[in-house]
Length: 200
Image (cartoon, rainbow, N blue to C red; front, side, top):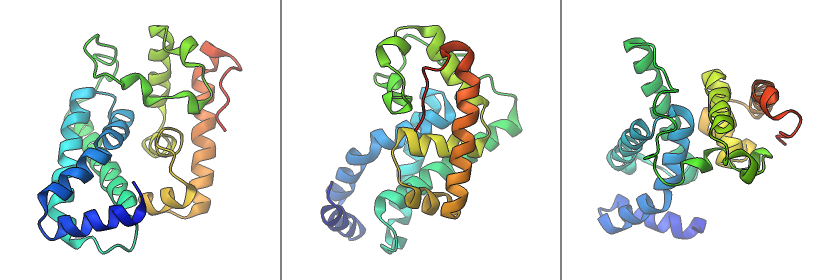
């Protein structure tokens, strides 16, 4: 969606145009779900949090002042909602993310959460459940801040400036955090795929 078209839709939605808001939801719901799934690992939880994201967007849309792009504002809400969910779950119990990750009834498209952008051949990786499982476990083994920044960059393709705005950190911190996140992830999966992984 072009920036000007998006801006007009947001303005219309702010004025109460439900069809305009629905168009925004339809445009970004898959991306929001992708971020949630990358951070939460559970399809059901990801659906729930995605819905919460758009409920919050709807409630606070009138406060959006166009200082950033709607796209960036939406991602900031998504990341914060996921972080809140993770923290709540950790307070309640020790969550085992392995259970249910590879169910046969997973939502179509879940395999795309770690796409070829990470430098992996999808035919080699996603054809083998064990390897895919290890990659998801490797992602989960990262700290919250490293997992988040890796997903925003490698899966969602945000620029350094966009990530800095979404996470409210400096561009230098983004670069440093992303460097370490990639390094930790590569180390976590090296045993399974050797030198085939090259995150750039």
